[in-house]
Image (cartoon, rainbow over all chains, first blue to last red; front, side, top):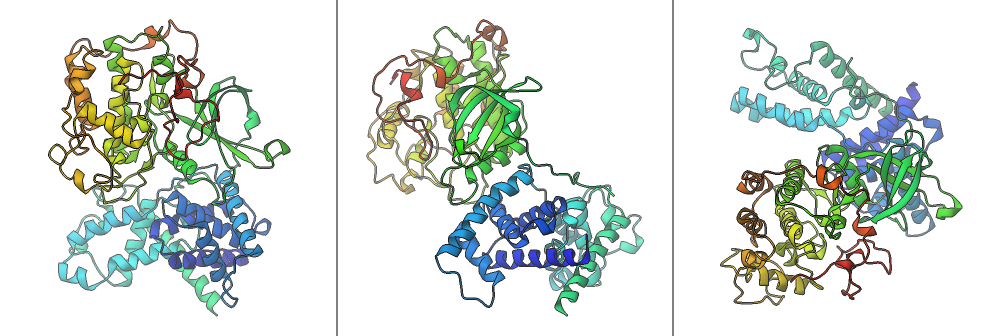
Length: 234
Length: 368
């Protein structure tokens, strides 16, 4: 994928996330929308489709898949407003109906492209499980002061700006964002230095096939993604 | 590097891959056809997804069915093979259509029960109910509610394997407080809590339906054929006793409890009234437990499967021997109307589509 394409996808994902926040969506539908988006453009060429229409449709489809009750009307209005910040909000009229119609018919198109495979295994549930496990290992005071859950959750959300959700197992992504969060806050698991195993190798909690190499690859990809953000900001 | 999936997404196949043989039914959101794969000659059932007037995009009910069926894989759940599309042509007014392709099952329970030549022994009834409850146990442990239990949605293959079908109204549920729509389940199989406006319901709604179906195994027609929700509640009270806060604590808090007229002073006579049809004491006891008014006291699928009914002689017996005597498909949709009596309006869940002028429930005789 070329650099400019990477940047376009980054922008569209940010637009999906921004619209999702305005629509008060939970983490899972946002993750589903982003995953569908990446999956679609893994197989289809960017030049053939309008990525913002695909993005808006990913959002409306994700809401249906994850049982978030959002009206098509709201998706069209919010997406339009997110994309055209300097223009007046959309009036009910030809443009509105045309946009709505295109999202509605694009839904079927996306579903066909996905071959109707609409069930996704996201890292979120694994992350919750891991956070619970390590919270039991930590000193309660320290755990309360340092916002590991919030930081790791934020890394996970941001990780969707690139397509790593398609390339790695959800369990591995969950361990990696946790690893990164602990490192960022300089927090160590108690007695970690004396243990025979690394904390993420405790088989009863974490997936057995995780390696340091996988963690580092995922962490690097997340950090690279933040570099694109800096590049766009400049 | 392990990948979670192969990154190739060819578009889904075209429906011309199959040739349609006959229309065999009408699902909640579209017609059902028997069809054959032109290449492999495999016989399948194709369910058309109606896409007319979809201003809100792809219908969420269809998406739910697809999603649920992709997750649920069990011997007693209908197997979704693939999804096909039809190109937009002048014939379908340029509306493209989608078909769900299922493995083909030869019969449905309503079709079998409406044919007097098909006789179930006690052991065979046990097998039917055991498979039905097993299917419910599986979907409920996967946190899915069926929400449209009725004999026509219970498919049976020619070898006697039972499959729950039509997940067009199904949805996922959680143990939290919920506000689902209570406009679900075909009226005759609708449990009292839904009729009284409960929106925070759970798996117990499907077990009421299982109870109605179980009784139907002997009576051969739906046991409570109400015309309206009010009438349905009256029939339920006449069979299961008056609905009061004494027999069902908390029922007075349901929306419609005070707004609807409920027969008073009715005694519970599930066993007495069914005794004319059902001689087996264990069967009567299980029926009594399934047709419990209070959903919190209604037996769940796990406990129902452990009921003595399934574990005393005669033990459940495979249906394949009995069915091998019949070489014709039996579907409710194709069953000849037995009686032309005008049975009021078809008791369908709202939103369901039925072809005008054809009411497949028509041939049933009233029992109560």
